[in-house]
Image 1: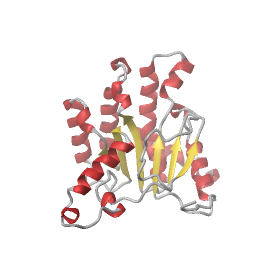
Image 2: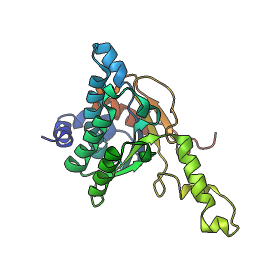
Image 3: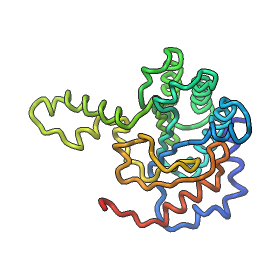
Image 4: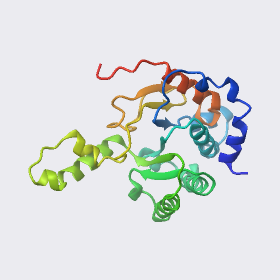
Length: 248
């Protein structure tokens, strides 16, 4: 049974006590996920790093299924940073990445939107990801941005370079925030309302640097392979009860 469908079937027995269904605030329209702690999980279980990555990759469709059930329209997943691409090949990150996008394209209703430096990937992996994303073009489920080879600074730099070549700017219009927003990797989408990072680290690590200016942050101590449905719902419940203050 596909992972996404299995997660959906499991949800019904938990729904009555799910705090999301009792909170009074709005759910995030755009959720950011930083799935950290795969290697920490491996160290704790005295297994090779690739085993932790395998468990972490297997967790992703399940967690996205929970987000879909909660009616969150957009999720951005920090799939691989530029630094991750330099990891030891024995960790098999690219193999797991290809398996992930195949699962998401074939077994879920999600529309995949890769962002980041896909040009840094081997050609076979690059083609695999772009073809899988194209396969989901007509899917009507949640939008999933897969941040691959991603850094926030490079995202801003790329958007700025594109904005400088915009015909409006070339014609003498000022360089504005709105113009950069037209060229940022998540153009046309609302900025993230909430970003969740697992494994206890309390930093963004360059994730959605431009877009996360007003995002609420939630840090979960549980490693990503151990992340549970109730952990997601606790984060969403916490978000719903916050009083958001913009600017200061």
